[in-house]
Length: 135
Figure: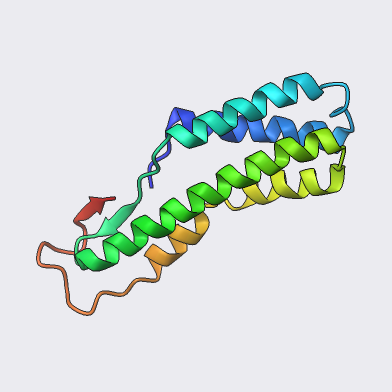
């Protein structure tokens, strides 16, 4: 998995939103939070996350991992949209829960990472175990 500036920016914006909810200043900063969440949504929509995949993974399995990563990306997008709507509904508990869940799960990338980590190839890699392929 590769970390980039855009991903770091998304995490920082979500951390700021979380801190506003925890401090109780979200009502006064609603316009700023709306802009930040719109930026987060646009950034998530446009970025592609890369994961390291062992070379010995069959091509059929690679497509499964790509589908799982896509599913988690769209889950993040829907939660950001829900967070935007909850901000206007003044539902602090649900908003805080959404933001914390996004940050704790590393923007929902942990499920894909765990799935890749538990993959045990049935045959040894032809090129050695240190070779990696990016999806």
